[in-house]
Image (tube, rainbow, N blue to C red; front, side, top):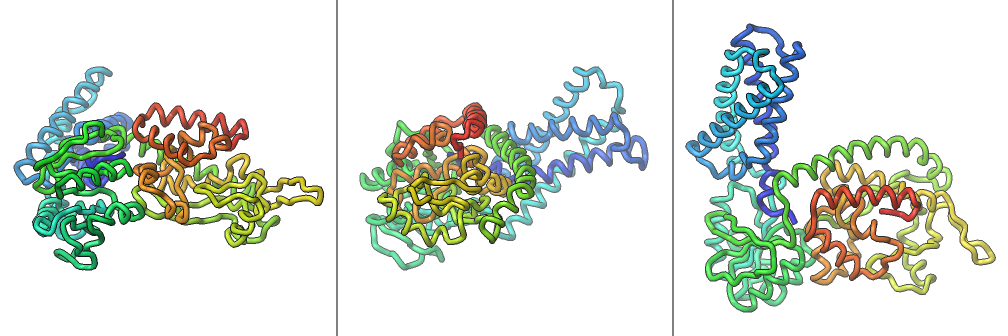
Length: 480
């Protein structure tokens, strides 16, 4: 779902933070030029304008794509972009001051000195930070997989390593015209060939694919990979287009590519969604702390052991992470799973869930065959067990709204079409949950709902799902 333009903004968060620091350093220095060595933040009027400058700077950085291709720009290009950004910042803040009729409250010497200092500091820091980054590997690099031929593999690899400024980590490649599995090209392992590349990518953590092989077989393969929810960059030379898929022209290294994805978001939308996740994550963690005090003792008394349950889940693009929950089952629940499956007469499906599960803390099947609920059922019925996942949201493993993260054993049963639901961060709630989780048993229907969410995503849709989640939880239907 998140194409390279928005991912680039997320990866350049360090530049945004540094730019804000430069802004405030210039703010203090500009004040010193005019008023001497005093603290500008001690004055209410200057505190207010500092906030205005910060908000204006942040909005311009995000919505005017100031940091787009920042690592590719030379000194001349960086100077031009920094000068444009400084000019837009000056216009924006000046417009605000005239609108609120406070333009006369601040010294023009302070104002112009600050802008000049900001331009110089920002240009210096951006240039220096880029030089530092080029000398060491970047964190959170995009995991890139190459689909190449034996003839162009080395050239493609050299181009990426030379021209993408360590934004990508090439984790493997498939050679389409020869079986070279087990070998290495330029230090990168060949993981697959034409016959098994789709099967390999089905279960591996790969963020994006650069496709540089041609032919009818390759075209069909690329179409299948897009349907799996992977972001596929196809080199333009000799390209057969997939008109029904979302596509955008971009550059990867020195190659011009068409990027295909099930859905896309703008930089501004990605920023707002992540901001909502952070705010919601903080609020959710505070509530989780209160719940620890209220239900933690009940869990320990009914089933001595840890309050929290951790489980490995599969997130966006196949990345595994530890998901947290309040423990609502006995400690031996996983060991007893096969026993319960056999006793229920049900097969272990893609999303196995038993309504009257004897593994739930405090539950019991009475002699007359009736099922008595316990504290674990209360926790699950009110979705209280899900609250620790707000910590996963803060970490960035999950989002407030997304798709349900599968367990590893579920993931290993996925067919190619099922992988599409992993194209985005998993969520605490989602379209499937608010569409009647207890009534939807068919996994194929769940996958279709997730594909609809990805392709039709908008901030308004997220807000609707969050509101419907509250309604479902209050109605005790189990939203999550």
